[in-house]
Length: 162
Image 1: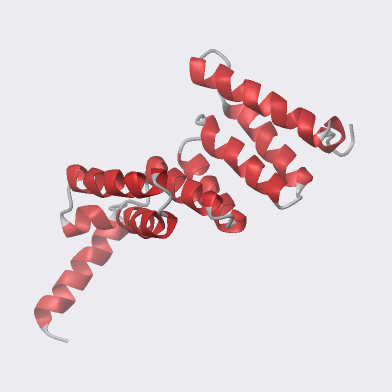
Image 2: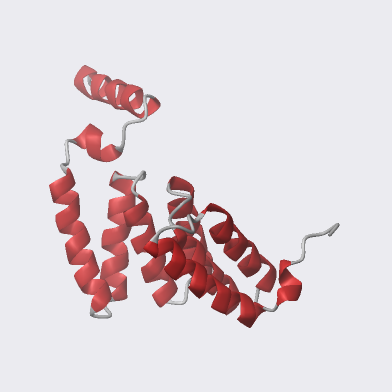
């Protein structure tokens, strides 16, 4: 390995250790990533899920701290009925923004599609716990969560020891 490559690797490793994303290390702009996202979203909305998934995977690789990109990846995985992967993507999206109810609701839908009412209930409870009730988005998603709650059945929402 030549010295330039070793220096570049060392610099990249230091950048990652300090919290940089691959986008920052490679000098890719937000506008460039947004152009890729727009293309992926276009594929997604026209049912070209495999193409969309490749682009969303690219986006989360280059900016692993974007809740939007993780959510988009989860959505395309859910559309393809790859529920386990969608749950993981939604989980990461939710981890990055706990107050955003969208990934939690869609994770609950995926759990239900897998027949896992217990984890669906957990996702709904997380949504209800973290999602602000005083915003339009919060009210909208809490109403959707209430509908899912009915579909699941209240028994699944009982916590051990209660």
